[in-house]
Image 1 (cartoon, rainbow, N blue to C red):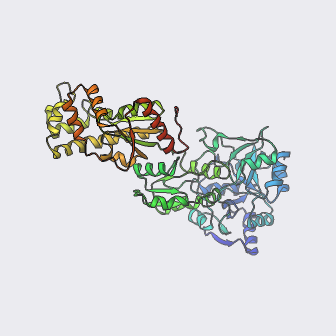
Image 2 (image 1 turned 30 degrees about the vertical axis):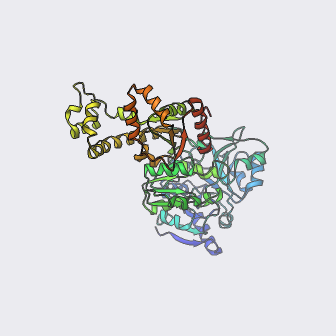
Image 3 (image 1 turned 135 degrees about the vertical axis):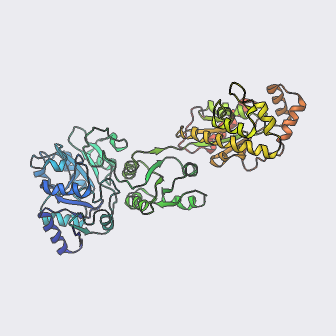
Length: 541
């Protein structure tokens, strides 16, 4: 099939398009939201062409576009007062109302439902086409089913050239996301899909609160029947696997650096900051700063991801209010509801005897998740573990006892001979400890995570911390604590302290722990209050 290219500003082209629609053809027309794939809503044969062209599931209902509220009357069993109030306020515009359908409307148009979704588009070409053809037009988005909705004629050509009769080119869509869908068939209006008309605007007109469907932010069950387009099947999606990453820009960047996606979809204002960070990503694609820009540019940005042939992309999601909820909803569905809430990671280190373990316990009592790298070091060498086998291969089978456990004394005697043997030991153990630490971080979404590691600054984990705190204490205090804790001689304690004399903690927050737990707890609370973003909360602060 040859797809004819028509111009929205040409009265003759509008006449040609209207003739095609009356003849049962399907074509793409511009609206203020996205381009729609239009056909005669009263013709089952014409509607079937929409499903064929898009590859659209048959249980997905279509929105019917009309020229004005009067044209709605033959299509519905009733047009109640709330519908009249909303039509007066928002038609023409991006509001779709679900009403009880008239029996004359084909079941193919409504996917077998006893309701019909209606709206009057606010675009001069769409209105002219509706007036000239004198037909209600079923018009879902003019794209292949599941892919990002089209906001330019070129987007339509990319998806449907050769599959439809014509494309009416009306330039870029001004709004950029599909219409708000409101169900008026029950006693309480229900927002099924957010769009250009916000919940607050609807409530202001109706003078009462409306309900918001769980389907706005959650997937429908496998056997649930969608009452509106965009509720059930994976929608608006590029080929890339998207993950919405909630939280601050710092947390987003740290998470991206750790997980290494191929691309990032972020706000315009993020780009300059992210480019200054050594992030291992192929592409950073912006999609606006404020909610209106994000909605208008969203689908174009999703298509840009496909042009760059990216496979994994992390997304900075917009705010979940006003029109921002519409963009958030589309991104959720594009990501197939895949989300992450990165942790805020506080690294904890310090010399022996300073009270690092005490600080970790106090932080755990405040609601933090503590990952003790000493515990991880013991965990990675359980009997039969890959790390234990690798250590035995490098340092001799004698480091493994007959019962399969690690003989730590024997390992120390062989691993701490010189700098080279220590490097071999660290190459094996640090890699495994780091991998296990990252695994624990991933399992604790949205938590404040404290990584307690004596050699934190020398490990890869330090690069993934949002902040690093060093617990210190005067030498005499540390010596007394070591003697009481480890039962060693004063000379041995001094030797251990001397081995750490050259540790460099510059550039990090230092907390002096000379006066006991109560004072230390107060200092830790003060630190967390000063460094944590507002979207992190702790139980005991």
